[in-house]
Image 1: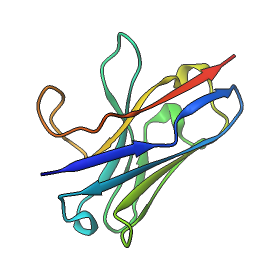
Image 2: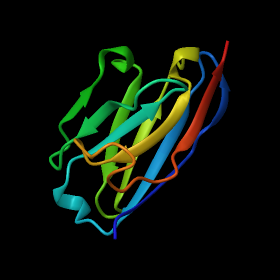
Image 3: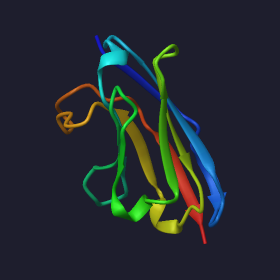
Image 4: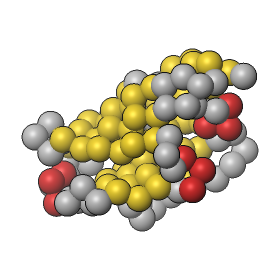
Length: 118
């Protein structure tokens, strides 16, 4: 049973920073690529950053230069450092493997809410 537990969200002013964490269990974390997704109200869930098992990273254009994804295989945890936050970054953030089936399919955590005020 895959379990994903996201944390670290909150309310921050534009220009601020947050660091999200995702603890994974039930998967062989060290051999899996991982990703961070987000879903804003009324919008589809989108992937914003991915990291391979070899720590090669990729980002959606809207967050390049502001977000950094990293992983600690000893802790089965993936992180998302978010700097220079903008109101349009407001969303619920989730982690999962890249290409994970969208809800209601697949296994997803509860997500963590990020709200950026202007």
